[in-house]
Length: 411
Image 1 (cartoon, rainbow, N blue to C red):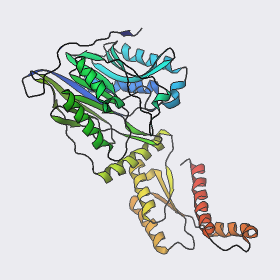
Image 2: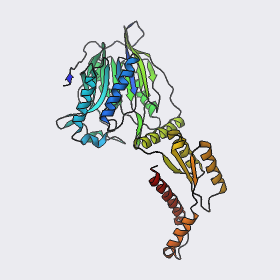
Image 3: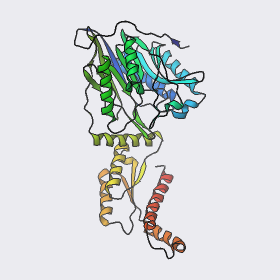
Image 4: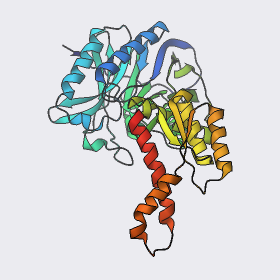
């Protein structure tokens, strides 16, 4: 049986931020790690493994991303009748471990016909606080109102004497959840996130988290997923800010387990330990997003590698570089498919690109297939002038050959 002991710290709001004597500290691990959508037992085991690693490094709290146990986005997995039993079993496992540190974990919670996007704080076998996401995004790639009901309650949990308010992802983009937590006595805001990448998103998140910390006077600890899931890429970029500004940034596009220190002083709570990483240059950011997205798409779907058409031009050359950086040269097969209009320079460049990156390389001329196709089509094309159709036939032949290699090899 899982016991739930809700704790909501009451009392004075922390005074305005300033330097002061350190009275107490709290080490918090930001678990910016991979979780597999749908693999609830695997994700649960990973939560415990990460927690034990963090504990060995001196952490007292581990904060995981949004919907940790299901992975994000779980989509129609949330409609399965068995989900509640599986989540309950996962929570039982986490509680049964009775780890002597605080786990801040996200999961879907069903009560009757209502499902909420929930986070819980677990300590030594008990759930000591829960919070349900209040602002549900339903734009662009988000469809949370299809599955969830918004929460309407503020939660503040006492963790080692630090009053911690809880929020989830979209909540951080609205003033009300943070202000309500502060009014309820919070000194720190813990926010778990499933925020996918788009260009410039890291800078936008930094600006918003910093603004919330400055406006509320509370440090904000923000933890995000890092993996590719179908068409989405979660870029990480977990962070911690206090009223003096940004104090920690986890790396983009790679897993990390960074530990920060919160210090309670006679003038408020501040972040005293963290690593300030610069904002990634725009082209680097886009390239790494492509690499991460391809890597996780291929690996999570069990493909042994990729096959791609290599023309010798810049587009396919860039695609080849992304594939090699994502998967390694041994899992990439480049295929040059020259036609009578293909220049020798293109063939030479394709060979040079494949040789430079060390990938498997094959040349499959398409002239014979093309002419056979045109002969077959001659009765239909009779008396019609050449046009883009002949060009498109070349492209379709190349696509057919790549499809055949993919079907035969599993690439």
